[in-house]
Image (tube, rainbow, N blue to C red; front, side, top):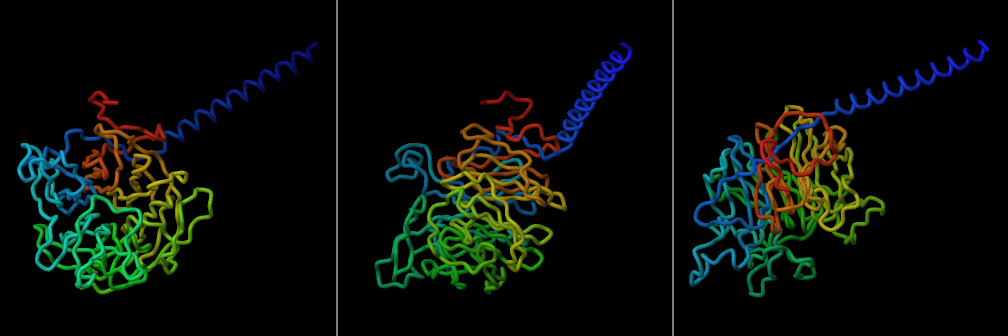
Length: 431
C-alpha cells in the first residue's frame, strides 16, 4: 500500500513539475515576444495644412525630406479630373479648384512655403509624367518621369520632341524605329527655387537597358553624399540600376537583378510559385543607399528587395508578401534615423500598409495601415521618407492624391503583426 501511495505521489509531483515547466516556458515566450521591439507611429490627422489658391494635388508621386526637415512633394496635375479643375478652365466654370504646381515644399508644421514646376522651361522639357523627387545633400532637387508620351510625327528628332502629358502610362508603349518610345528618358536637376541646372538623358531617346546615355522611364533617384554619385532606379521602361556623377552627369556603371547585365526580354506576368526571376521586372522602383554602403533596390512587381554593394555586387534579397499580384508589394523604402539605420520602412501600395523591418535580416516585425480614405489609411501608398526626428511621410498615387505624416512615438513591444490604422491614442478611431 505504501508503495502505491509513493508511486501516486511521484506521479502527481511529476505532473506538477511538468505544469510548472510549461507555465515557465509560456511565460518565457511571452517575455521574449514582448522583448521584440519596433518603432511605433501615430498618424497626424491635420497634417499638412490646406493648400492656398484652391489648389489640389493629383497623383502624389514622390516625397523627400531635406536637411532643414522641409518636406518636398511632387504630384501630377494632369491626373486631376475635370470637375476638380473648374477654376482653371476657360471660361472659368466655378470658384474651385485648380491644379497646384508640380513641386510643393512644406515646413515641419505643414505650411506650404514653396511651389514651382510642371511646365517646360529654358533648356529643358518637363517630363510627360513626372515621378519621384529627391533633395540631395547639397540641396539640389532631382526628379524623374515615367511618361511614354506620343510618338513624334514631325521632322524633328525624337530626342527633341515634346509630348502631351498623360495621367498615367499605358500598358503597352508606342513604338518608334522598332523600339519602345519613351518620352521620359531623362532625370533633371534643379535648385530649390526651381532653376534648371542639369539634365541626364534626352527626351524620347532611350535605346534600352544598356544605353548609358539615356534613361528609360526612371522612377527614383538617390545621391551618395560620400561620392556625389547619382543612383537611378531605371525604371518603368528599363530594368536596371544606373549610376552617374551627380555633378557632371558622366556615366559610371549599371546592372540588373543579381548584378547581371540587364536585358529587355519580356518576362511575362509575375507568378508567385515560379522560380525567382533572374532579371528585374518593371518597374525598378527605388534604389536607396544605407550609411554602411549597401544599396537596397525595390523590384516592385517581383515582390522583393535586392541588396547590392555600390559597384553592383549582389549581397542578398528578401521576398515580401509573395502572393501579391498586380502592382506588386515593394514600392519604396526609407531608413530609420538612428546612425545604424536599424530599421527599414517599406511602402506597399497594393496591400496598403507600411512594413517595419529589421534592416540586417530583412525580417518584417510589424506593419501599419489599411485601405481607405481616412487619415492613417492608404489608397496606393507610393513613396516614403523620414525626417531627422524619425517621423514618416508617405504619398499616395492614383486617386489617393495626398501626403500624410506619421509621428514617431519611440520604440514599443511588438504585440500585433498588423496594427491597422495607427490613430492617435487621444482621439477616437475613424474606422
